[in-house]
Length: 303
Figure (cartoon, rainbow, N blue to C red):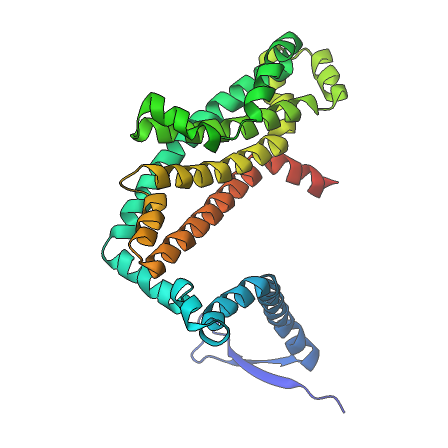
């Protein structure tokens, strides 16, 4: 036996004294089809939530170990130097309420962005020139290899002696640390461009500027952004070390000052802030890379 659903709908007609009713018959199959998109959306939401939960398993396990380990696994003496997570979060909250953590973040970000920006402009510009002109590469390559293998922190005393303990030395050491990842990856990105693309572009009459704009830069963007992400991480890490040596503000100063004052939860709050700041910078650079590499996604989708 077939079951039907009876629905009455008001269908007014022009000039009619009363609204007649129209009987519409709908089968169970029609009702099921209407609920299918809703179920599909629910499945997609559940799948996305499960994926996020699975990817966060290691982080959640680490946080749980940080919270429970010092209390139940470590000795009382160790717990003094390794407080549980909730004490660190409480200390971070107090620093936030007092406005202290915001001031240190602003100081570190200002120095890091200034040095990173200078390294980005210089590294990409010089990298394009070195990769495009072979003679320039042969002249500068030995000098670049010498400085590339010199650790930035090893030169921190030199920058401090020459520029003092003010902002100039910190910005300069950040720029030095971030310069070489950008430079070397820019050179590698340009050199790995398919020669057939360059020949095809030249055969179409593109001048050097249009060739860089339409072929070289788009093809080298993924490799260049790999260097930019490495430089972003290096700029933060080197800056924190520089702020620990001589500074009156910044996350590095907060960490070393809390350690010397035996404010251990404040010290871990500063370390946690550095980690979150580095994670945020990495997410921002990944988003920028996707924005400037949209043509690769479009080509992949079309294929």
